Image (cartoon, rainbow over all chains, first blue to last red; front, side, top):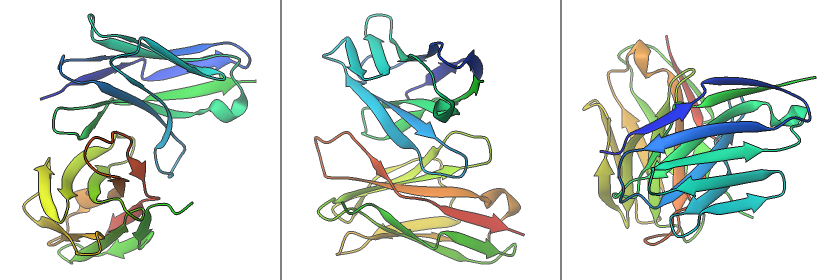
Length: 111
Length: 113
């Protein structure tokens, strides 16, 4: 089955700096890659997603890049703000349409 | 806009008791997924339903069962509860085949004492 690896597990960045979270996956047939932000005790919130026919997608301060050949995709957050502090999960939709999550990255935005 | 509804939001049970969690998908969504998220863990897929039929099964214990009803709501039944079942249980709904985005409910926090 699909295997998703996410790094780093914890990330601290100064407010205003950029944060990058990276994920790899194993099944070349996967073609949908969502990113979720989860605050403590809350539901995962979809923040951006990308499909395999696109290499990059941007939404304001958030961007995702996808390299299908290398089977990796990354989340980029620019001009980080305190409210960006949360756990971020990358995910891959497997060939059976279920979402396989990475282990998560706890992002701390330092004042 | 209507969102996914889960009930109850919090549930406390004793070991060996039974629990039933309910999920009401967004109107006109016919596909439901259940996930279990332990403390500090990523959500783990349990089971999914499409048009009232089980479509896929993940790491769901035999003590758990689920079904989807004619109004598309789904229930997760958990018997012989164990301490390790304490977790957040999310359901997510999807409009149907060909749609990728899963819309998550607020979750049910189950605590087993």
